[in-house]
Length: 106
Image 1: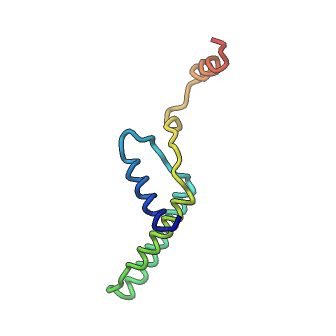
Image 2: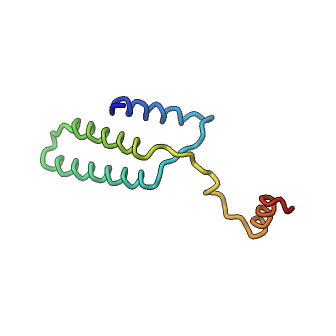
């Protein structure tokens, strides 16, 4: 699959995820680290070149950014989001009951 098709598929998947009946998804922490690094690098480069010449055409930068973002989206695909990780920890009694339910010793 070429980059343009990957980009279109990624955007289509993102659009489909906005519907309320879809399962919640997330990405790995490494995806967000790489995205932060990419954004900081692009911003630094743009600030440097804008300071030198306020009449810059950033189109090539945005095209390159899109390629890097598409690579990140393929490298770190969407993962199902486990909502349970955000719930409060169970108390000792709740853990005891859960263990008994799991083993069938209720």
